[in-house]
Image (cartoon, rainbow, N blue to C red; front, top):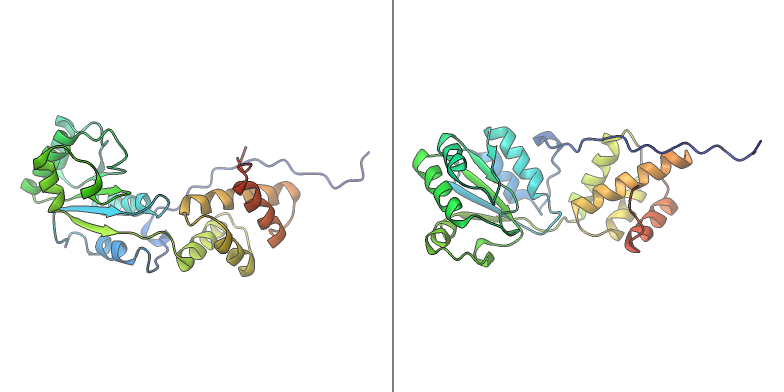
Length: 231
């Protein structure tokens, strides 16, 4: 029989990413957007656009607002009669509006329905609406009148807070110096932070070890080299 320490099989359990207001980490990078959400329904315009780079937490903020406002999520490429009816009935949300396939005519009618009903629409995008390449003049005019709030890429405070919380959600204790190492080394993206935490949790479970700086360095290096697929 081998004298080696037995390796525990690593089974990636489904850890739900917290999407409530209490789960939100706030820093200068997203403070303006968070303030706007907290002010709802006291918004300056019926249509709000959250614009920021991939991984900056736009979808998380949108999910928080949807829960708060009871908003219905609409598909950017299917904004026909049912979507217009939904917009006339209450708040609505469209994620990644500039990702392609936007139903411009449908969005124009959705915005009109929101304005007429005195309701609200939140959209998220990587770019400001003026850079979406909208062809329909009436829609371009409606988007120009919207309030656009910029979300920056995660700063050190936000990234450290998110990483710490993701580990805590998994009931994993990690030394602060390991968190700071990750903050300095990983891509400035919340989605990358989630991947790194998932990978480190899996490796630590498999090796039956606490998460160390050396383990973090090896994991980040593997991700940088494109070898960090979880399973």
